[in-house]
Amino acid sequence: MPSLPPPRGRHFFANPGPTNIPDSVLLATAHASVDFNDPAFMAVYLKAREGLGRLLEMEEGEILFYTASGHGAWHATLCNLFSPGDRLLMIESGYFSESWGAMAERLGLTVSRVAADWRRGAALEAVEAALAADRNHEIKGLCVVHNETSTGLVFPVEALRPILDRLGHPALLLVDTISSFGSLPFAMTRWGCDAVVGGSQKGLMLPAGMSFTAVSPRALAAHQAARLPRGYFDWTLMLRRPHRSFMGTVPVTFFYGLAESLRLIEEETLQGVIARHHRLAEAVRAAIGVWARGENGRPGPALFCCDPARVSDSVSAILMPEGDDAETVRRLARERFNVSLGGGLGALEGRVFRIGHLGDLNEPMILGTLAAVEMSLALAGVPHGRGGVEAAMENLLATHRALERAR
Ligand code: PLP
Image (tube, rainbow, N blue to C red; front, top):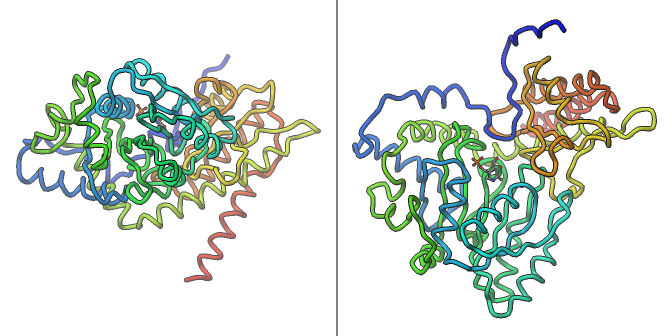
């Protein structure tokens, strides 16, 4: 078999995290070492931390940072808030709710789950019923993944605090916002969240390796009574440090990058960022809608999410027709067109591929990705409706015409 030509041109990175890093953020992270207690660095650090709080709409509480990926923040949050044997209620959403729940069990917690069809997400009524059945308030934490990156579904987190309050249930509300904050609407304090987990490598457009938990005063109080072994991630020890965060050396370069990514987001405005994500996501969904029509009576690849009210503006998961392998499409996109797509995770491996549309992206980047996907579907012999890219262009044009008119 002749060898493949070496890739040329820009690598199109369409994974749902890590995401594209803007040049100015990359340059900002290329910073020489500085003493992390130096007042000049401290000023950068404090400003970045403040900006992150604004992005989360956090009005009170603390942000604790870790030199770890999102898994580290999951771990830290659980071991700082609970005691051995405590019960959690995990709202099932997909691969990431499964993984977070499994981690809780490894740490010695008991996990009950609100079962869900991954294509529709859990019903709010089922969450309410599970909490109402817990008359003795054994459930200490209600955990939810805001944007399930493996399926492309958003959970209406804002509906959870009213349920807890209506029932008078004291469980802490823990939210994973790893693939939502900085891309989708989120309001930590207004939505009554107690612990919010985030990471550097998605909406913040930074390299992977830094994560955090934003913690409400209520969760900080619960921390005082929690008895799980904390090891490396001990909030009490962290809060005594000058940065009120981290154990050991502070990864300073992340904060130079974070300051720049926050500057970019604030320049565009958070509303502008959210609107751009929605616009690009709608274009992706327009293309998928055309592919899904299939060919010669055979169905085509379809949007995994079946609930239009819960579609994600940061990632689309695309379900292959029965018998077609998503990995073939991903391989062709990578080898032929230098485009990287997300794969199916866990039970969805081979069944789904994912287009990430979060972070530093614009229309031509999305259209280029969609064109590469459409060509890969054709090369792989996957039945699909033709004209997905045109549909995406039409969709974008309609939005831009409306924006021009409104100017
Ligand atoms: N939660 C969600 C929703 C994610 O998308 C991811 C990673 O993609 C994680 C948690 C785990 O984060 P990390 O891979 O940074 O450990």
